[in-house]
Image (cartoon, rainbow, N blue to C red; front, side, top):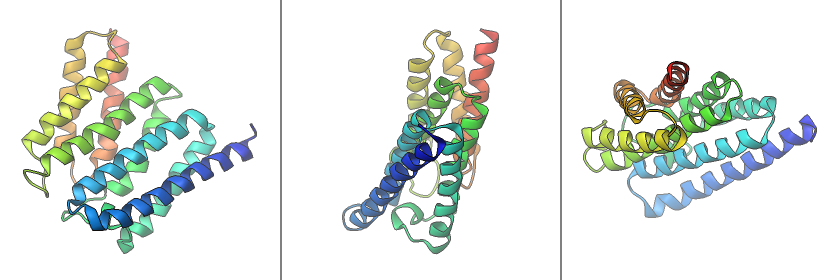
Length: 208
C-alpha cells in the first residue's frame, strides 16, 4: 500500500471515530450525568483506536494523524464543544495531552510495538477505571480507592504482557507508575503514565 493510500485509510478510520465520538457526546447528554464516566469512555475508545491505527499505518501516517488529532481537539477544548469530554468540574488539559502521550509513547518505543501497546493499554484502561471508581467518592480529585484500582489494572496489563519477567519487578513497576499518576496534575498523567511505564519496561528488560 502506498503512503497516500495508507494515510487515506488512516483518515477514514479517524473520521469515523470522531463521528462516533460526536454521536456519543450527543446521546450522553440525555442519559449520563457523570462527566467522568463519559470522559473515561471516550478516553478508552481513543486509546483502542490509536492501537488499531498504530498496527495498520505507516509511521509517518500514524504520527500525522496523532498531530492532527491534537489540532482538532484543541479548538473543541477552547470552545467546550464536546460536553462529555470538557464538562468535568476541574482544571485539566488531559484531552489535549492524550494524543501527545500516545505520540511520545510511539516515538520512544522505537518501533517496538509490544512495548507501545503495553503502555498505551495502561493509559487506555488504568486511568479511566481509576476515574470511574474514584468519581463515586470524589468527582473532582484523585482518591485512594481510584489509585488502588489504577494499580490493579496496571499490574494485570503488565503481567499479561511481560509474564516472562519476575512478578516482583512487575509489581514494583506497577506501583511506581501508580505513584506517577497520583502526583501528576492538570491531566499531565496522559503523558507521564506512558512515558514512565515505557522507561521502567526498558529498565526491566535491560537488567533482567
